[in-house]
Length: 452
Image (spheres, rainbow, N blue to C red):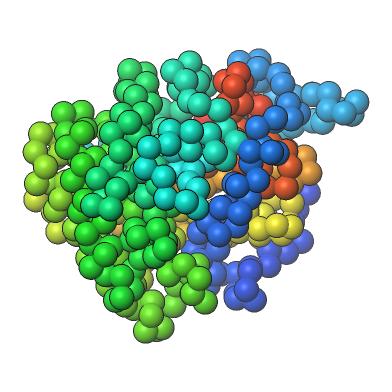
C-alpha cells in the first residue's frame, strides 16, 4: 500500500452561497448524476463551432512558462483592467492506493487532453469518403506540430474521440482513407511518447445505424461493436500498451426522459444497463481475439452514459477478461454541473468551500471506495469547466481542486477541449488549435501543479 501527501495549489475567492443541483434533486444524491456531460447540448453547440469557435479570443496571452510559483500572485491586463490570480496552498492527504500495475499505469498517465470536435465531428448525411468532416465543426486539420504543442504544454495523455458512422459502407467496412487519417494522428502522439485513447464516439444514435442500448437495437449494436472494433483493433494490434481502446462513449437512451439521469428502478434503464454490459463484453472479446498486443492491451469500458452512477449502480458488471486487471472503467464528470457545464448555471466556485466542492468529493470518494481501493483502475475520460464571462479565478479554483482531489483518489483526469473560446457554444477551449498557444496558462498551471 502506498500513501503520500498531495500539496494542492488552490485559488481563494468569494465563498459560494449555495450549490443547487439540477432537476430539483438533492445535491448530495445528485452529486454523481450531475457529473455527466450533456452531449445533446454539446452537439448543438458543436455544430455552431465552424462560425464561432475557431477565432478564439486571447484573454490570457501570457505564455505558461512565465506563470508564477504556486504561492505567488499573477497580474494580467485584461480589457484594460488588472485581474489578480492567487494560488494559496492547501493540503489533501492522498488515499491508500493498491500497489498493482493497473493503478500505477493510471497514475503514469498524469493529465490528459481531449481532441474534441475533430474526428468525433459528423454530418447528417451518410458520407463514407469525406475527410473534410475532420474540420466540419470549426477546428483546423490536426498537425504534428499541434500534437507536439499539446505534449510540450504538459499533457501526457491524449484522447482522440472518433465517430465512425459517416465513414462506413452498408456492410460497416470503414473507409480506409478515414482510418489512415486517424492512424496518422495517433502516430503523431505515439512519436511524442504520449498515452493515446481511441474510441467509438458519436455513434450512439439509432438513425446512424450505430449502437443504441435497447432491446430493439441490441443485435444492431452488437454487430456495430464487433465490426468497428475488428477493423480498428487489427489496424493497431502492433502498438504498445500506451495505446488504449475505449469501447463506447456515453452509451445511453438518446431522447429518453432518463437519457442523462440513470434510474436503476426504471425498466428501460435496467434494460439499457444490461445491454451495455453485453456491449462492453463484446468489445473486450473482439479486441482480445484480434491478436498482437491486443491480447494484453488496456481497454476502457463505461457504464450508462459514462456517468459515475453508470458504474456505481448494482446492475453494472465489469466484463470478463482473459487479461489480468486490464479493464479501465471510464467515467465522465463535469461536476458540479451547475458550475462546470450548465448554462447559465452559476459562475462562482471556491476551492476552500464545502458548498462548492462537496459534489466532487462525493463521486470521487465513492469511485475510490468501490473500485480504486480494490485495485480496479478508473479514468475520468472527460471533464472541464466552461468560461462564463471571464470567471477565470473560479475556473482556476475548480481546476486546482478537481485535479488534486482526483489524484488523491488515484484517478487521472482528461480535460475536454472542443477548441471553442468565443460565441454561444460551450467554451471549453484551452489550447489554440492553430498556434498551439495555451490561452489560459493559469488553468494549465493549476492542473499541472496538482497531478505530478
